[in-house]
Length: 146
Image (cartoon, rainbow, N blue to C red; front, side, top):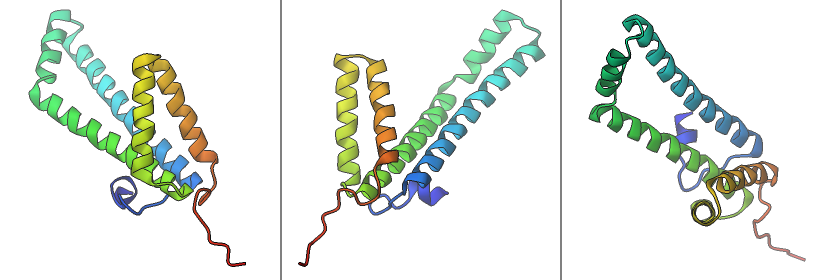
């Protein structure tokens, strides 16, 4: 699984069903981590007894520089894994993976800045669905020997 998320950066390919499965798995991992974080906060609130000042002090202690660094590294890793999955799927359709992904990201950022973040998020969802629908090697040049 590590190889799927972080390996084969230049040559890897993912078929449609594999792309869907690994993308959903990554989303479930992110959701599980966020839920675990909130459960930890809720459990510690119950242990403290609901004292608001103590809870604020505890959260300040948790959200220190080491936590921010670990959280930042985690976000970069999950972001890279998602981009790598998308680049592999794009490459499987016959397009250059990272260059096409870069173009998609630039368009999404422009849409986010000039239109809205919601429209950009919807565009990302639409493009993900399109990647799930396009068969492998759709854009690959084939030579006709007739």
